[in-house]
Image (cartoon, rainbow, N blue to C red; front, side, top):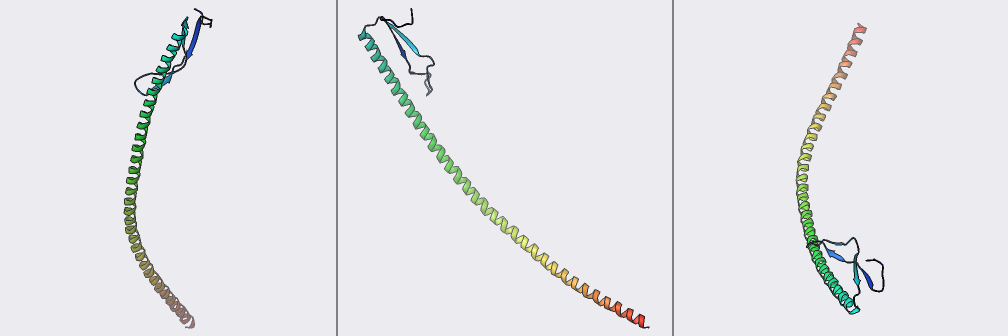
Length: 156
């Protein structure tokens, strides 16, 4: 049998989708399905082509139904994901607000403690300044006393 076209042979090449499994997996057949029709009367050929067309239409409708079902599932998944995202963001925001409140309370305690320490250091600083001033005055008086003693010693 020759693959060349002659008057008594008709070669039909049909490309179509074929279901691989009962899931939504569909794939294109890698090779073209070659159908060789030999000495078929035109009426039978047209009838066969109509049946093939009807079969293809049924497969298209089934594919459309499966795609619609998949799209519906995709929409439900999107809604679920969106709701989950909003809930998660809301929970995170609430936790963050609680954390901010806790941080503010902690910051207030730390600032209060630091203010108390600064107050104590300022008081200690003033006391040390006072002691330093007193020591400088005592040193000045001692120098004056030493100077007077030198003058008295020299004058004697």
